[in-house]
Amino acid sequence: MFDRARQHFAALSTRAGFHSLRLVRQTGEHCMLRRGIAEPPSLTQDMGAMLSVRLDGVEAYAATSDLSLAGLQGALDSAEALARRIAAHGLVDLRGLEPPTGHARYESPGLHGPFPGLAERFALLAEVSASVPADSRLVNWVVYLDQQRHEQLYLNSAGAEQWQALRFVYPGISVTAFDGSDSQTRSFGGFGSGQQGGAEVMARLGFAGAASRVADEALQLLLAPNAPSGATDLLLMPDQMMLQIHESIGHPLELDRILGDERNYAGTSFIGLEDFGRYQYGSPLLNISFDPGIPEELASYGHDDEGQPAQKEFLIRDGLLLRPLGGALSQWRSGLPGVANSRACNWNRPPIDRMANLNLEPGDRTMAQLVGGIERGILMSSNRSWSIDDARNKFQFGCEWGRLIEDGELKGVVKNPNYRGVSANFWRSLAAVGDASTFEVHGTPYCGKGEPNQVVRVGHASPACVFRQVEVFGGAA
Image (tube, rainbow, N blue to C red; front, top):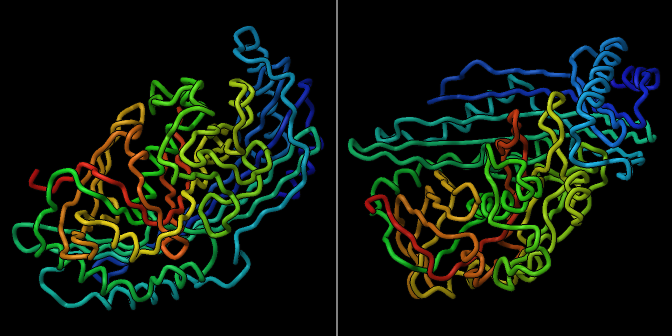
């Protein structure tokens, strides 16, 4: 089909000065056991194309699942007709925006290596599920494994041809314990720790041996006291740093949101255009990069969905805000430098400014040094709830797992740990950043934005980090 699409693209006819085709095929396989009982597998497949044109400085698009020459020509004609209808109302003249011209291929690591078939996957899940200990307080547990593939061909009339083939793997475990009056859930991996690759992802994450530990931690939480309340030092583990980066750095820095495009749906930002190059976003220890080059991270790619080549860029360096998350169109509108992050969730959505791999660079502290530098504090990991305002400034997050820190040592487990803050102040309280030994790659396929809605994969890699005097509270608060 992709070879045929190249032939069809060469045969398309339009009076537009520029046109492009983005053909996408997505497949997915979901396998799950609940309490050791297999549920029916879910198998999905979707394929279609987006045609876009640029005519007299106006851009328009149309999508189709009819991949015949006639179907593609019909979509291109619709896009051209739409461009003519909206030409009088265009907000931005794109005639000076140079189209991409490069040829490239990008593939996930291990893409062509062996991957367990359905029967093998269910056998593996059964083995993992059987390792959950027999305890009447363990009332529910699920183990699952998702595999998704994304293949995309981008062609344009300026000569660009870009091919990407990606595979995403999500092994997950969730165990719920109940003692008659309280329930606690502990989880591992899943849709918060997906990675690109093949069967090696499961080994890299330690999936096969994790269930007994997850179950034991759920039981520990039943017996634990609620987290204390008050201002204290906070040690966030990488799986919670993922959400912190996502919500209070990633979304505020999306350039279309700053320009006002998302205010009716996803909201605005506490950051303005005038802040780039001058705003102190965090302490001098804060270094945030857009990095599409970590192979196993969920949003690693060679080009974005408008054909722009992707490379590592610092958005924040030494705490200073440098550049936004804005693709070529938003860069053209704002006059600001951006990154190659114009992305679409599928063939029937246009690319918009999205997070991709947004990472916090490692520092120089070991885990022992992070803990040892805290006189009174709390460690939190594994997000379970989140709330943040429309400007992505005031937030409140809850975690599954907490441990007290006293006089530089880890102490007892606490349940229902929560914390709250204001983005504009929170990152300035960053006091210590873990080194490469604490650095972990996480990511989720469920970042939503746009009208009509788009749900895309994003990656967040981070070390463990310490924040000073954060407001924390437990479930009884």
